[in-house]
Length: 372
Image 1 (tube, rainbow, N blue to C red):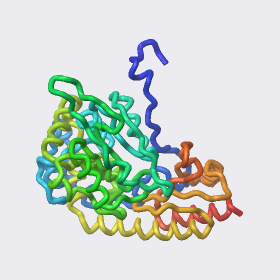
Image 2: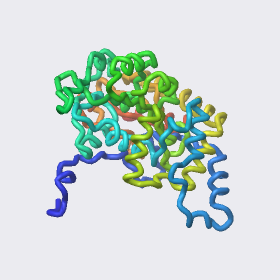
Image 3: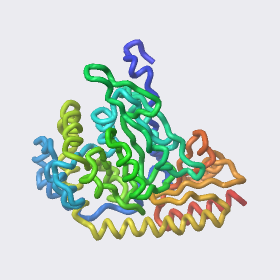
Image 4: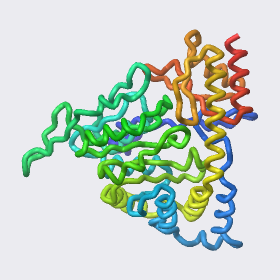
């Protein structure tokens, strides 16, 4: 701590990203990266963008990333005015908290969810309330219905009551549980809160769910956030986007252009467009991950683990007779790393990324040896 720190910095509890260790012959199953490479078209597009002498790198990229917005719009059947793009979905979410969730009333999100949400709240001064997951670790839509936002009298500040909210955000599938909320349940939440923005964070939706993007034309309070890090295998390129009503997108653009007008470089734009254009590759890799997840779930259950139903590229599992932290440490000693959260209700669970079949088999064999 330094005397030069601002009070904001003093009060922050920063997000802790997944470990990126330098261990030889590592089986890395802790950060939900796709085990398969991106479309070959991505590298070709990046090489074309560079040209023979990389001279284009002296020029700024398109601040609006119009090519990428057009590609997202074409892929999901929306207009470019309904698309916002940013440097990974984390940056997109950061702008969402500032532009759409920073109100006088608190926002709602699950008590077990993406741990960046409370960090953004601390950074931007957003009040929040957590909503406990059900006993089976699923989101109950009823917990988000019956809320309201009271505008107050003209000329007076908003009056707050216990059931008033400034917005709702949750991942679907949820992280780190992997549990999926059905599309009709999402629409119930959105419809029941017409005066609050509902943000659905769909980082993992392509591995087993149906996107809520199809609902945005019916609900001006719905924003859906995606990333190309997971299902498009582009975690190293940092590209994310949001789809919603043009008024919501305009708010995000205003914040972006007050922060960094060039969040996506020329190579990221070119690579992202190419990835979105290669639907067959996308479908093949998603199917491979889903098949491996099914086998991994079966293998873990055979070893006595309780595995939550997952629609993501990871599973969330615990063993009734073995401590979660001890299992994670024992795996690490065998050069296999998984994610363990020292948090209430889930401190016995391991979040295990679905790797290749060979990586999943190595994990299973290691666990079999550890369990004896």
